[in-house]
Length: 189
Ligand code: ADP
Ligand code: ZN
Image (cartoon, rainbow, N blue to C red):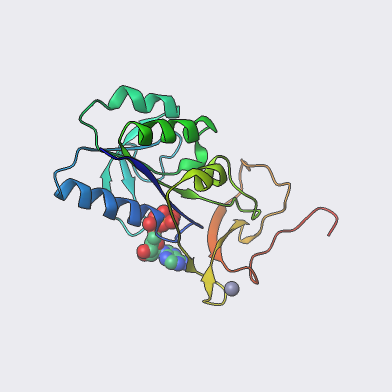
């Protein structure tokens, strides 16, 4: 049969995981063979599930590298789901294409931009080669407009452009924000 790639993108809280879970559950209801994956580092809520911020979930295999997908699929696999796809290496793009060529429907969800508003990891390339792309919006936590960016906050204040990814002793959080309300502080500011 016929494989293809669907990608679900947007900022944090835009409902990417929710939408991925909805599509995978529908495939299961239709008795399709489904396997979901997520990067091993993402243990927000659970290591063995894809979980949305609203609390719905589906079983997932945590993997360290996209190549590991091949260890969990066989000739019967019809649908492969991948959450947090931005955290995989660039090779995830070739692997998604290979799976689609083999007749598998690949549904990937992930951030298209990092908190600086810059394209995130392999996602841009995956969008380019996918048959279907849905860009979701969250609600801007400042003004209520559609939000397509993710604001990083350190101790409640906008993060600086060059702040390290891990900040020991600081409280870090993220908010969905629109273009107007998204703030990035560069060092020269
Ligand atoms: P993503 O995978 O894109 O981070 P999730 O599917 O995990 O998103 O979560 C989406 C849910 O997050 C929404 O249904 C809603 O319950 C919740 N939520 C929290 N903050 C916001 C926000 N600012 N805008 C929209 N939804 C939000
Ligand atoms: Zn706004």
